[in-house]
Length: 208
Image (tube, rainbow, N blue to C red):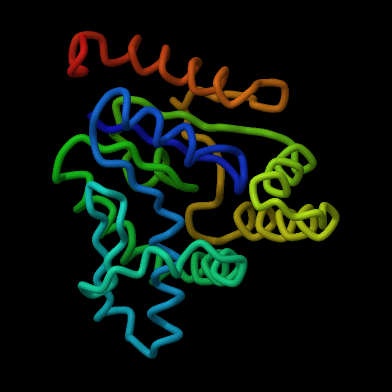
């Protein structure tokens, strides 16, 4: 089973992906953290061809064998990951690693180009969508911050980079199901995604 979830920053991909992985089984992979791990590796002076990133079934991220999970989800590496993701050589390397992970068993993988590039043969492809304003409000609430305008500007910069990058720009796969989340609660989005997976996988999922 391969489930691909794509969409812009702060649209809810991680929450939906984790919920689907728990319901249907399989490893959940938040590929954005892999780009953060590359940024951390570059900060440490590790050459790209020597970078090895693994994701455990417990969602721990190992950089050349070291668990760096707790260092990755910061505003600093939010920005740095978006910047390194524009480098074609980085994307090529991480696509290789992401496909290796997907070959290890059932997987729910989320990111920006999972359905279009990484797992074009995925059983289910979802693309989550929401306006920048809605996503900014969600991120502010998630981080318990109050700087809405700065968050909105940050997301705008990331959206621009994601849409304009030369390699694998952010866009839904042709056979992806688009879920607009603006007026949906997280529970409603998860329910819609779950129903789609059940429909596509039928009896192949472990509870079928």
